[in-house]
Image (cartoon, rainbow, N blue to C red; front, top):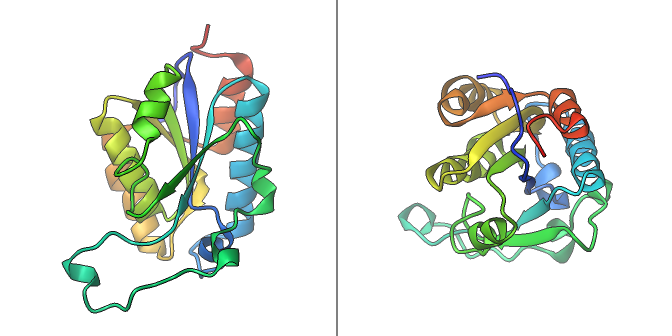
Length: 189
């Protein structure tokens, strides 16, 4: 479903735009994904809307991980891309699962801010972005996804999420369409 409106209190959730993740091969040019995500963050901040910066630092334990050696990421792998221009008012979330809600304070933070809608962007479309968006939907948030501010390691996985999953859990739009709604105050008081 195409993006139509934003709630008065909508937050931007930026998933895993850190040096190690954006340095991996991707289906779409990562520099454009980062540029679009940074533009959204700037627009949200300029209009007093919350920005959440999510990073991944580890993996959840589970049967599928049992044959993998424990991973300790180098410090530079964990660093945010500088284009995001993280601000003191941004809320930081460190996750150890695909989604940004499990085992973090994200839901409590958003509810404390009165947030009713999230715009989700980042990498990877079919993992961190989709998991975060699904969980947000299950928690009752309105979900919007900026499809040109995300990518995946696989074009097929990205396309599947965008075409098959996202229409079932939220609205989709471009960075420009979402920024237009932010700057016009569409749906916001």
